[in-house]
Image (tube, rainbow, N blue to C red; front, top):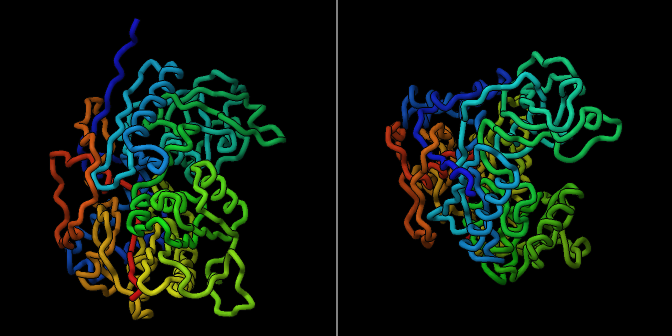
Length: 514
């Protein structure tokens, strides 16, 4: 006998204040004022006006504490066609739902992106109307953020549980926003916490807090506040969880088979493997990172995806170039100048574009400490790039100092560099405030979730599907920079447009070395 037909989700348009389940991201006062100054700078005020600039800033603080409306998966199209990956993923997720025995199964919609040819999008359902249970499990903020993006709760992330919790107990999961909950606490935590869903315990409390740190699944989420499939162990050779802008970066760099490419800050290797896949595993991708165990993770990811053209080294990329023959290595860093056709610098940054993030405890000194390191890395990148080569600089933060101001500095410091168009260009233009011209801002790509007027859905009706065929990449120029804020419409834009906006905060610049 056939079971009930799974319900299908939809995407429904909400104003930013209507999507709010959590308060705006919590910042130290000096960090708040610093960011407010960034988003109310004179160039931006002249372009959009004070009221609109303030609305955007407050909207940013709101969306940062909430998860994006889509789960983005990069398909390993060097191993299988996109449609085959899509079919196998749908089959695997359906089988997992059936095995879970969930009484309220929801059909998983898997959509293609019309301009990014190896991306699959899964709309997130939420925030859902759920009733917290009496038994509470408290998890760390990082674990709570992972739950909001579809993960189950693993034992290392658990901070507190009921006194007699055992496998099979129904529990509610709360995220400790400020990190104030005492590990192993049995009393209800009264601090700053947010509800992220209901689940079923998979472990005894004694096991979780034993002297030997527990590993494995601690709580299986049966009713997450934001519903998105868990990808733990799902088709590891064919799909890779990656934010949409991070996938766009690889296409913007545009590596070709046979080229020599450098990924300067490569861990954990998602972008490295994407570049190697775009090159059809032909040529050479060298990946550098300063932390030894992260370098091993790059190697493991490349091996899992059968990418033999990737070589990873533990090395400080600021010192990756030398003209001294005595210091040159035979097959690794440091390298002589002009060694690479293309260089990706996905730079260490303040990470203020990451979502969801309910609190940022860093000081202003910490937030502003990345710019000098980024310039050292840019200096090495320009030297390592051959004439005629392409350099892509990216960050997952929203500040001017780490994004547009770095571009302005690079153009002023290195006359050999020029900005060139990006393809695909699915984000918005750069943010005014760094003295760049409107034409230069158009060539940049800033993903600004605060400009999204789309929130995760509350409805259970089916969404209109995207096309079943991925169109070729467009050759159109980037959209013009507008001084007008996008109007808050009452009609939902296409899902692909929603996914382009409702993502993490991210920045991409593409340079040509003349």
